[in-house]
Image 1 (tube, rainbow, N blue to C red):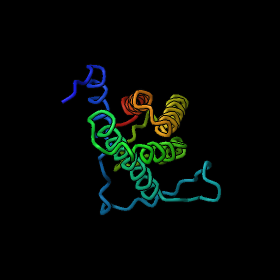
Image 2: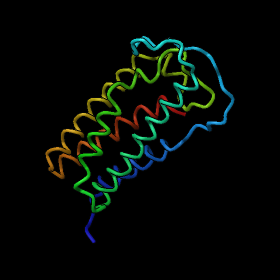
Image 3: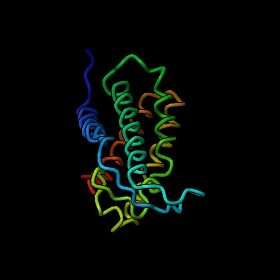
Amino acid sequence: MRSVPLSLTLAAGLVFLVVAAGFTAVDSRAAHDPSPVGLPGFAGVQNLDVEALVDHRQGVMRAVSGHMAASAAILLDGAPFEDRISLHGTALAGLLTDIPDLFPEGSAHDESDARPEIWEDFGTFTDRGQDTMERAAAFGEATQGGNQAEMTQAFIALGDSCGACHDSFRF
């Protein structure tokens, strides 16, 4: 058994908390809220109902959570799937390409864990989303290089960025 430095153990704990928080799911049998939402970030998509948008948003976040958990298992816990880490890095970079578009004005919903602070301080939310997108891209790039230390550092930075957003903007 190999020894894991304290910083990696703490980072793994943070990643675990972020990942665990991402497993909240919407009950698809919940009452349908037909409130229309205009989506300026999505060309040609208008009047999408809020429930559908929240279902999509939560699906994306669950996928992010799954790839984060798999990456943590490989990089921090030593799961023997190093040959698949680039799949997770690429997926995370793709899934996190434009976080603010997943949260247009008017998309609050009772079945969502998104706090109203997202729309009250959309500038800060957008800045944190941009940071997460950049860190996800850096992690994706690091997984292509195969350097364990670089991948781990980039992964921890991505987890920190996810956590910072969840701390302020997620119930």
